[in-house]
Length: 135
Length: 92
Image (spheres, rainbow over the protein chains, first blue to last red):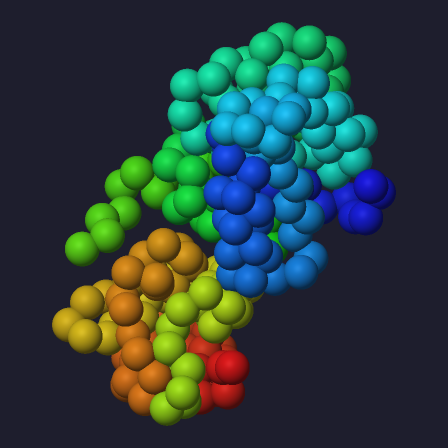
C-alpha cells in the first residue's frame, strides 16, 4: 500500500458502512491524492472493532507517509489506544490520533492533508471541528 | 511588516447555477485559498467563512448561482482574491 508519501486518514468505526461512507465523502472533498483507509466493524463484519486490523493499519501507515487517526466511540477508542501502545517510538512520531468528531474531523483532516499539511497539523484541523457550529 | 501586508482586496464571483458549495467544490476552493499566505474569507447568505477551513466553508450552505464575496488581506491578497474569483465560476 505504498501509494504516496502523503499521510493518510485512518477511520476507525464500529460500522463498516459508516467507515466506508465516510471514506467516500473524505475522498470527494479532499480529492484523490489523500489516501483514506478504514477499520470498520468487527472481524465477522458485525458492529464492533477489529483491534488487529487497527494495529495493522497503523503499522502500515507509520511505514508509509504517516497518518491522522479518527475514531468514533468507546471501543474504537480503546482499540486505537491498544494499537498505539504496541507501536515503537519512531512509529508513534508518524501517527496522530485526533480527539475530534468523526465526520467533521475526517473531512477537515483530509482537506488539510490535501493542502500539504503534516499529520500533526491535520489532527489539529480535525480537533478544531469542535469549534465550528453547524447552524 | 511592509505596508502591502495591510492590503485588503475584495472580489465578487458567482457560483455556477448547478454547483452548490458542497463537498468537492468546497474542497477545491479551500485548497486554492490555502495556497496563499493571505487571510481569505468568503461571504454568502449573510455569513462570512474562513476560506481555508472546509467546515467553515461548508457551513455557508451556498447554493448554485449564489454570489460570493471574497475578501483577502495580507501580502498576496490581490493574487488570492483574483485567483479565487476566477475559480468560483468554474467549479464543477
